[in-house]
Length: 346
Image 1 (cartoon, rainbow, N blue to C red):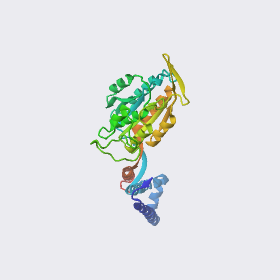
Image 2 (image 1 turned 90 degrees about the horizontal axis):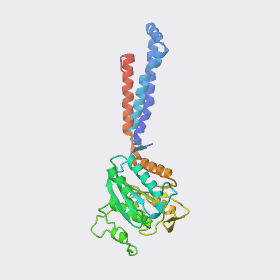
Image 3 (image 1 turned 45 degrees about the horizontal axis):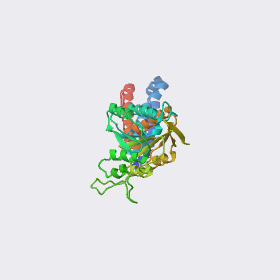
Image 4 (image 1 turned 135 degrees about the vertical axis):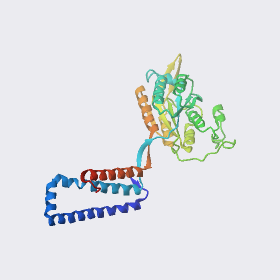
């Protein structure tokens, strides 16, 4: 815990003076009791329990003063609070390899079920958008709070050829920031860009943006699930840089075989391999995390973990109000006990 105004902590040195003053008053009362036999007799009659109880209200008052000084020093601590996340983009792989059955009943169905469960656990105010990607990427559902529309969009997935992980990130960013100059035309057409030209096309009258620190944008995040490596489209590392420049975290989820596997279907076969290294780079570049899900149960756990990460967050927050409230409660308790026990305040 840190303090924004640590100079006020010097006031804590006054607390021992209060203790000394209290002890001095007790000594004076003790001398008075010895001088007058009747007072000594009353003290004897009170008993030890009553004598101990008389010190409780002053002790509570001292604690209240301590809390008040700490509150004045403006303490700051890392606390867990509800997240300000307002929009989450789910980018889901629908390439042909998602029909593999190493994750039961198959990768696509397991991913669909986990995504629907994830959506159901999010707070109702959080918008969710769906991007489906294979050889290209398209928005299956614009961000919405309507959970039924999201489930319908997920159930409509159709398997396609190839894998364009970079396109999925760029399409997600274009959905989150429609006013920024993201060059979707060249990306979707597959035309090669001149060397040095970025997907951020700011010369078409679009709203400019200033790059920010990675992971600093609190209002949106992207979750990308894939079981393969990029075979076409935008370089995913370049797309991750675009997300990092906008402060958007890209959480990556890998499902499938890391070492590679040949998958056959209706007379054709394809070699698929999960590119974990690239997925980790995407997550690290955007200050997010990479998760591996080898089974349907693992995938559900990944989405549960992501749900908790995106709905609550730890951040440095001033907690002066907590100390002030504690000081008020202790002061009221001290005064209340003193009135009940001794018919006076302290």
